[in-house]
Amino acid sequence: MHTGDADDNDGAARLSPRPASGAAEPGQAPQLATMARRFARARDARQTEIAEDYVELIDDLIARDGRARSVDVARALGVSHVTVFKTVSRLQRDGLVTTAPYRSIALTEAGRALAQRARRRHQIVARFLRAIGVDAETAAADAEGMEHHASAATLSAFERMTARLTDRSTCEDGD
Amino acid sequence: MHTGDADDNDGAARLSPRPASGAAEPGQAPQLATMARRFARARDARQTEIAEDYVELIDDLIARDGRARSVDVARALGVSHVTVFKTVSRLQRDGLVTTAPYRSIALTEAGRALAQRARRRHQIVARFLRAIGVDAETAAADAEGMEHHASAATLSAFERMTARLTDRSTCEDGD
DNA sequence: CAGATAATTTAGCCTTGGCTACATGCATGT
DNA sequence: ACATGCATGTAGCCAAGGCTAAATTATCTG
Ligand SMILES: [Mn+2]
Ligand SMILES: [Mn+2]
Ligand SMILES: [Mn+2]
Ligand SMILES: [Mn+2]
Image (cartoon, rainbow over all chains, first blue to last red; front, top):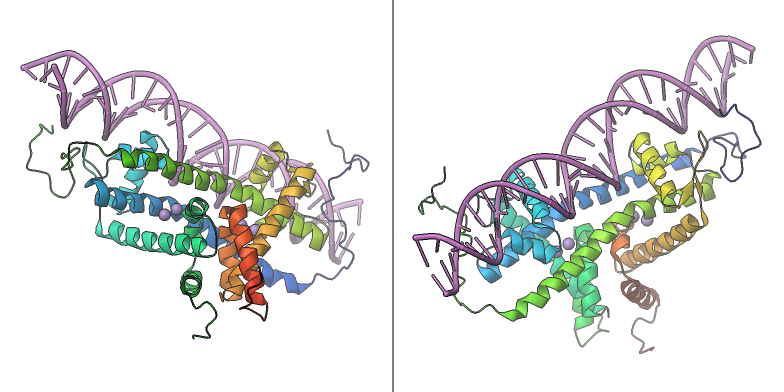
């Protein structure tokens, strides 16, 4: 099968249709590495999102209810309690929480620290989105995802803009 | 084991330590559903991120090189070519690309449409971050992750702010 | 054209993060 | 005190996305 006939090629480009110029431009090789670095950063952020959301939520629950039960975490996240159980086990393995059988979830020092960083970023992003005119509910929803991809530089810029837009004197040359 | 002794409880909160007031406040039940909805949206976005990045990149490669080979996709993303192969198979299953054995990757109409939407969002987010003062490289990296979580309302706000900040006349009452 | 090089495909492995169904333990109300 | 309901834990399933190693196919070069 597929003996190499040349006429069944409708739509799919060939592997190497001689891209017009024979000499390979070296200008796109470094750009490849740069793109790869950016995508790798996004992948890394995706892998820590869940841990950040969990510890932030657990911290919130402890502050509000005095405890963080896995059933409450499950209801807040909208996932099953089994998913929470398994994820919390990973968080414990990674040193962010401690658990004991049939007890509610406690944060380690590292977990509390991560929760505080996560909450700070969450607030900066959410406040910023509201400040630039996004309605509160959409701002909260977008912030829940965007927060994990905002670098320190972007957070600083967000805080700067939020301050500028929140002040009555939006048009001062004040820096 | 674990006969129910009450003294080995160091650090882990009990399951139900009677949260001070016996009456359950009904004000936090609707908040639970709202939080769950936000988290669900972030999860949904996470599931489409990869498809969006792939079709956008494939579209870019076709525009620039005249073709999109999986090896180029792999190098741009910084993942193995096997990962690209499997992901592209899923994209084909989902109707975004077409492939033929040992041929390069082609976009379907749906794939091209998604690529255009993804590129537009990408540009809006990246331009916006630069406009508020984030350096170009950080802006590009953050945009790569944030773009997938920006709703239509947020994108509109970004465009508005970018226009306002890019104009020389930052302080006009122009709307 | 034959060999070398490069790209693709297949096979098989892993972790994460979802789920259902079922089993077990705790807490509370009567 | 104990039944009963709710919370937690276990077993087992799945898909997505990552990987390495090895086989196969194209493309290029001499
Ligand atoms: Mn958050
Ligand atoms: Mn989040
Ligand atoms: Mn993109
Ligand atoms: Mn992206």
